[in-house]
Length: 256
Length: 256
Image (cartoon, rainbow over all chains, first blue to last red; front, side, top):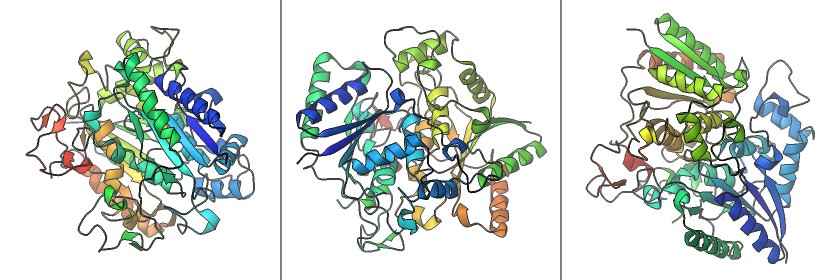
């Protein structure tokens, strides 16, 4: 059965490696017969900054409270058109692929601004107006798949388990766990290309081949086994003592 | 002796808790006789998105390569005025304090865009055109202090060592280690206020008092003991086997 895949990407240069991967993704998925939606953030002139212009009809004109205004705008269908359109794409998608260069160990600002603005109260958090009840494995995007395709300037060693930058997957935890698993998506292991400044033509071809394999298994691959908030392993949002006993930190939230 | 402190902040609402803290910071530091510089990102209309407009005189007009253009613009003094002004403030500062709300486990996009744009090649990376030689404890901002003041909507428990969001200091590692320690700053432990949506007047007063204590010790407090790249503990950017033996992950880069 045909699937719908949303590609969100953040690089303005058409000949960049990020965009070569985007082109490849579109071609492969369309050849598979899938429906491809695209959010070319630079091309769209996406507004990165979350501010008062996101709330044309305020519930409180004296004081800008983001959560209150987000809740009001979402619930009363008064969001800006660009934000509502991205939410519609997310709802239509069976999987979401993010293509971006790693800038200072995170997303380019334009992509962070996509998260900040599209992730409204009532949508990505405060789902069904039930506070944190639906979160981390439950939520409006439950069952959809998410995959980061990240272009990294530095060498793989620097991001290895004992590399000086820290392991890439831990650096990206605020995104994979905090932004994608949070509203319910199943997040696949990150796909990274390292040393992007110095890749030969042969290396680029190899990297594209490796990416095609990931795409072919987009709906078969196992996702990162993040622990579900409502799966019985947390007691008042703290991991139960008998799970990952005596351990702390980001990685205890993955069921290895 | 009088010091210079740069305050970078990211909230548009003057009555927000973030801005109350900013006001407090300015007052306390000025009362101490320090020189205070401010970067009010929303107030300045800071451009969040790093794009072709950052390079009015390109070295290559056919293809936008961020690293090459950043290197060229910085080296030839052709950066945009707003970026150059922020770099000057950083160079003038003895300490930098960042005030921002935690949005999706990271900085608001406008602040990420400050990092993306101000952190030029030759300045924050590629210092002295020596690749990664000056990094993590060495660099153009060496010896300056940095401190994050973060407003967090959720409760402290969710960010505790076994809390479901992950420990706050690990979620912020890409900023503290990756963006602040990287160009040489000594980073103090993050100052967080939790449950910001529900604070009583009494709680706000207590939180401001706790913050004043941090400010009074800004130049006395011990910084996070991140391991220095050039301190002899890394071999080709991998932590030496005998340090934090058998361990992996972000926290091994801190000398506990």
